[in-house]
Length: 189
Length: 189
DNA sequence: CAAAAAAATTGACCTATGATAACAAGTTTG
DNA sequence: CAAACTTGTTATCATAGGTCAATTTTTTTG
Image 1: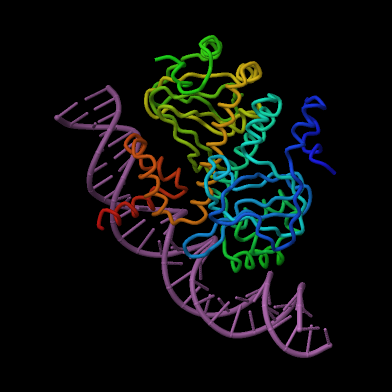
Image 2: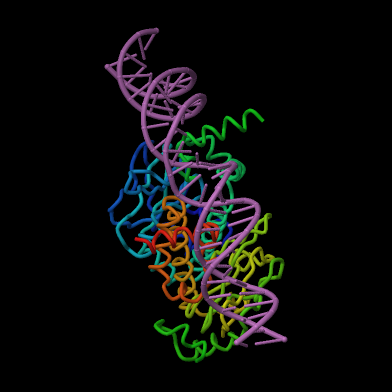
């Protein structure tokens, strides 16, 4: 296992791949660890090699909203802060012991400048994320909580097995009581 | 007015700028025109030079959800379809006579390959869009309809002046009746 | 500018989900 | 393995926002 796996499938020379992978640092976290906390300076984005992370936002009423789960092969960060070199507005916690490869923004920018194929790779990665977020906006606007729960189960069966129901509820934007009612109704049917 | 204005502020040689602007085509639309329709092949993304566009999704019950408005200096497309060269799942309509510069996906990909500064520009543009969408997801999940309406007015005062209330309602994900009640309440206060 | 069409408002009623509280089930740890 | 804690469920009641239908206001057009 090495960061090289991240780039399998892109046309890039071995020398360039070495340049890139040299800038990743492997870091390990334990279940319950806070990887990034509200107000921290956001230096890194993380590639999840194994384990499970959760990025969430806490509102004035201390209610949590899960923005993203991250499992194998996902990238995780507080991207708004990461992109604009600002302080974190999100928290990232480790839900399951994890091995991550982290990359600092300035280093990645330098690599992108030097290695055009990497720049293209990163652009397409963000395009994919943009597309997923658009889909999520539409889903929150137009689907009922039950429909969104079913879509979540269909889209992320592995995540459902790992995380708690209250994490899923906070991803769907409903209370844990509502999710419980939905689950009961679905079980009956 | 020429597509060159799109790239003011990026470090790019005049020769490269010419290469890029040569690939934009100016197109004009009238209020009410459908620029892109459900099922169309999505070839272009559009830079709005003037006027106002709206991208929206229609669900099974014929209810519309506005994903994005586009005014001067915004880029508009059905991005999921554009990124993946798929058929449109959205409709784009012209809300106010518009002059657009359009760019085809394959041409832009070629230009990005040849001009690294353009690739970086495009990546940062998508990063900005990603960040805005994340903010919108959080806002839909955590804010009331009234809070979202107030935020919309604060964020897009120019758009509010141009578009109909039912467009705003469909952006906020509420009915036009609800928006009307919210407006009444705010007017009273 | 009058008629028609489009947009916005209002009222009455309904429903999905939230809030609160109590409790049950599951999991961790001394 | 029992106590303590965490997670999930259930019931009751409250409410934001939806639905439907009628009406008023604004805009467009012949």
